[in-house]
Amino acid sequence: MAGWSGMLIKFCWIAWAAVWAGGWLYNLARGPRTRITSFHWTGLAIVAALLLMERMGGLPEPVLIRGPVPAAVGAVVLVGGTAFTLWARAVLGRMWSSAPAVKETHELRTDGPYAVTRHPIYTGMLGMALGTVLMDGRVRIVLGAAAFLVYILVKMRVEERLMVETFGDGYRKYRRRTPQLVPWMRGRG
View 1: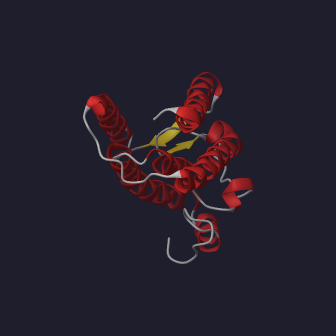
View 2 (view 1 turned 120 degrees about the horizontal axis):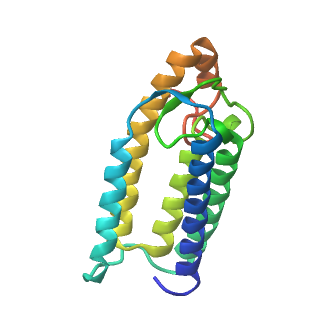
């Protein structure tokens, strides 16, 4: 993907990766120790699959979505998703980890983006994926976004269970009042 849309996609995903890498290094050096962790290998498998799909870039590939309107909508969704996920990451601060985990002195965050959804990092990242699909539209991008969605849904179940075990009724109350992933979707979850 060339032009402004390709540059915007790269900029947003590189900004996300830089913040994640910097946060990981900072937490490694200064974050609280992890007491409980789980579910790390699946993310690595998804990343490997996405990298393999990227290596297949020289193969002919149909475009499922194209045009200036999907690209413009995708740009707004991509930038909004990037901003939302970076905001959530900043608010979570030292409690963040790449795998579902409970840290020493772990605090349940329910403010800022965590008042909008229980998993605002995933909400933002899925917005980034959707924006990328709308701007790029190639089959492998759509398949990568679908694989990422499955990964997020599985990972959220693990995190929800861990938060209930850790925070009990406090998390159950938070879960009743705050949507899981999509801001306007209340109900089960």
